[in-house]
Length: 223
Image (cartoon, rainbow, N blue to C red; front, side, top):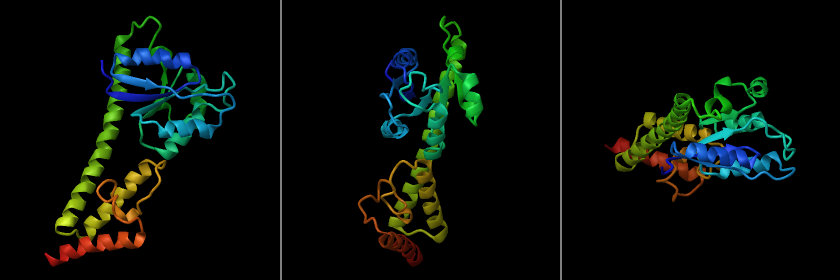
């Protein structure tokens, strides 16, 4: 089956990554792992994570068992949630009892041994888990795409006939919301330029951003 979704799996044990690469493949997921080196810093790991193109992140809780790193999955989850708060991510571990005291949201903790038993006899449970992951990914995608579509519509209207102050506020608000959903990306475009794709060719200065919005409103007043 051709992979429809890509999962990033943080586990210091490469054999565990390979194991779940095989198990997820038949459900339409491609699983990628991350490189762990002795005494690797937290920042080095997170740089790999934030630069990877994934649809969902799975995090093993117990990462320090081989002494390659000095932190565990709760630190990863906390940083990821701060940078990408609504992006689909879960703690996927067989150390649930260890994870629960350190993870604020227990609903994101899944016991890998219960979901994928060695006998693989609980297909219903596996399918429920897979469906949960897919729905989480699609819900996030739809939310992002809806915001981007609204932005595109407002920009198109502004370029065609102008926008009023209420629509300007909506444009700015949507830009801010999208920026807050992914704090790993540098804000090269000033907030009031309010664009991701269509306005990338415009100047990146706040003065010209303000002028752009004013021009859209002037068009509206002339109608």
